[in-house]
Image (cartoon, rainbow, N blue to C red):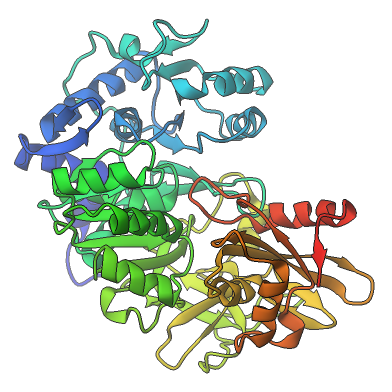
Length: 553
């Protein structure tokens, strides 16, 4: 390539130094004595220099044991200081941090271990039985297995395992020497998809993805060194670690308040006591928070905003949150593979609630035609009329590597010509606000009509006697598929007949969209981030139909 200037030094510097870790280390220098991390239950607080020293101890211990560039450090940890150490320390020696859901079964954990072949496995002591069983099942055996005893219950670890404090004891607090060649394309973080549609997949993220994901949040909140963030959901997923979590907060020089488990009372207490500026959580969590604040109000005036993700914000909910919690509600839509890619700002709400917003600053989001036997081309756009369904596709080179680890088949299915094909169905309007209708995999075909569960769920959730619902289908001889609605009551007196009557009178439901079967339940299968798992409910609905548990209209 021909250039008009000498690119040598820029290329060498940019490609080897533009990393998330270097951004964190800059903060260690300029904010040395500033709080970086605080754990309210224990009262432990780490300044940026203290946090760096703790991470160096873990990094030096692993380096001493031969852990090197591109080795995997797999961890199943609640939000805790150990999670932070397990995110930062591997990057110091060129290794890859690989967080995963602590609620996985032993078999699921073993599957990830065998797929990623970690050199190090760190787990929370509360899941010790799962960890032991998973290691028995897994063919691959990690070189080092560490128990992080967050609950302070164990004097020693199981045979062959070591407690975290014992592992890092007497290790140097100095930055380990860099004996590898860092590069902006190096994988530094490997996430597992949340598994709403089946087996989790490994999503690799490189230095550029980490830096620009941090920039994205700093730009959209905005986030600065003067902020204090707290995630009400786990850090192990993309929305947790990147939306106000470790990646942007520590890159910006902000302080992180640790919340291991979400409790509405505790959350509000922390906001008041520690002057938290940003909370991050899913809409269902915000509902619990609002209810608590209504009954037992706290001074939460320090909040600059609450950021939600994972599901759309319905209008009534949005207005309630704005009135009770903060007028500054944000909502992001995206994927594990590409972070958030559309965004709703406070200025968009409540008017555009229910939509997913419009594309983020560095992203492009389109809706393209759907075919049975091929992908719609990136330029085969559906009309911006707010009515015509298409598949949502995303171009986000700053925040994705456009692939899965050792999974060429699914990589080819998902990524095409620089775009990610999400599998989500939606519409867009003349201002390019996206509205998600559901997933292609969740689509119900009844008497030749394409039905998207999310639309029916939104219509039923408006009923004041309904807290939440999830819609799926069961096989039907005459229709092909029949619509089923599982409903969590808000009012225990509600009956299926009332819900059915509400559906019949709803201006938002066509006759063919009205559920044929109902069941009242206490909860649905969900991921750890609160997303409803339609694929599990669909399997359950088939069993419930066979067992006579579904009520027919």
